Amino acid sequence: MKELNKYDIDILKLSDKQHVYTFESGDSFFESFEQSLLKKGNVLTRLLLDKGATMLRLSFHITGWIELICDRTLEPFEHSLEITQQLILKFGDENKELTDEIEMIVRDTPRINIAQYIFEFISLSLPMKKLHPKLSNQPIAQETEEGVLIYSSEKTDDKSQEEEEPAIDPRWQALQKLKNEGI
Image (cartoon, rainbow, N blue to C red):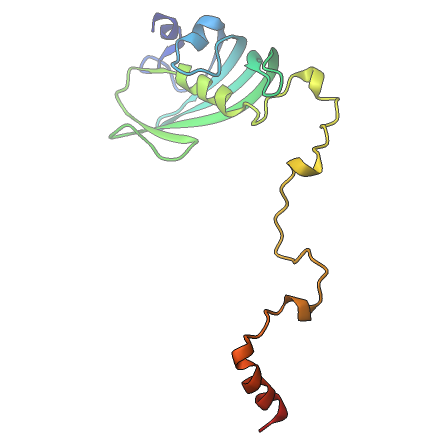
């Protein structure tokens, strides 16, 4: 937890203007959070904090790299980052999240810690499919017909409609014959 203390910003003492902060985050930053995806990386965060009478506008610019594990080869690789995000902290009577980009904080809050915001922005920027850069130029291997499932509402057989109709029960054939003759 001591690692995350350097991400504290004393907002009570700040004047109503723009302030610029720079934070460098390494492996110890990622190890401070309990999760399994991110353990290593080197990230530089430039924060532009615009303090007003009723709110704080935080503009994050995050660059660097993190180590990911390839989904295909299970080899580690460095994934580069370039993230720009905005967050608004409005002063109010209670602490609560209004939207993804707007939160309410108590007016007398002495300091904020931006470590969680940085970690969330990095986590949300991760690709769904993590592929090693050496695999990005290789074509995807074609799957065999046996390994591909195809779902369709169309019939695949070329049988005629007569063959697809169920056979008539012999007990009802006489009635069907009378019906067809119009008797």
